[in-house]
Image (tube, rainbow, N blue to C red):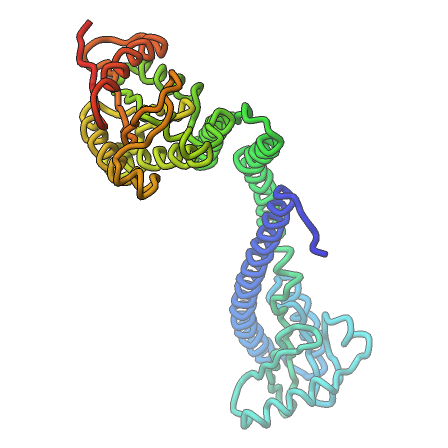
Length: 436
């Protein structure tokens, strides 16, 4: 089972991991540079110190009268070199390994250093005995050991100089303050970054998550207020637009006609009143079928429902082929429909609707009735009469020529226009262009 972490925890883990990586890399680079700096300094110091010791010892041995005075002279030289910081450690050793003078506590404790003589002889042999000094790195003590042969009379003495090599501990001490300041700066920076991420990313996501759950539970009035001036705020605004659209879809679904799924009376009224409030110019086309009742009586309610659905398809296809993207189609009920479009599209849509309706409606009749061009059915008085093949009457009401203040006013005008267009034979479209 996978562990789930909150976004804030994941951000904290990522920030912490990156911070530790940065501190590690920064410290590694600083330590490496510091060790190199110390090594460079110590190598320079070793070269200078070696020259000083060599030169000084040569001057001193010139003035020495007897070899018995060597020990005192060496002790004085060792003390001077140590005090001046010219070397870290120095020892004067005879070829027999006897220590004449030293400031190295280890060598001083044993009083002899035959191992150093052996090291000197090995280095001298490998170099062919031609150098005035020999050096090696003592890995055990982490120091540079330099051996200088000093000839006094017939005797040779070895001056062993030791200089520290830069190490990690020494480098750490040197860069402790910079690293400490860097760690503090990283911690403060991370706290600031975490604060920003929480307020600009985590909290808005939490708000959106809660709002989404509220929407899922049916609360379509839920809105979010996110002010981050970035894409997350844009996401919040889009979320609000989505909830508005969902609410409209829900209202349309609740008010939709169960047969055609088209918006019902309430949505038709809202759409017309919205256009009136917005001051838009529009044409509302009321569509009504002629001789539909006789067809319903003859062929039955199920066939009548097929005609209703066929009519809705004709309206929808006409809008799709010839209308505007935002044209509206509603179903008042029965065989009454409303199509709302712009003035320049009204005539075009009406012709498309009448053409397709007249061409296809005959397919809903029997061969006998199609050949006859009518059906025999009782009229409202109970007397058999001839009813022609169904046609569609389109009554157009517009605010292009006169103002319309409400949905109620529009429907009152539609009654008269519909009555006049239905008096005409076959499918027709009549647009009310009266100015008063």
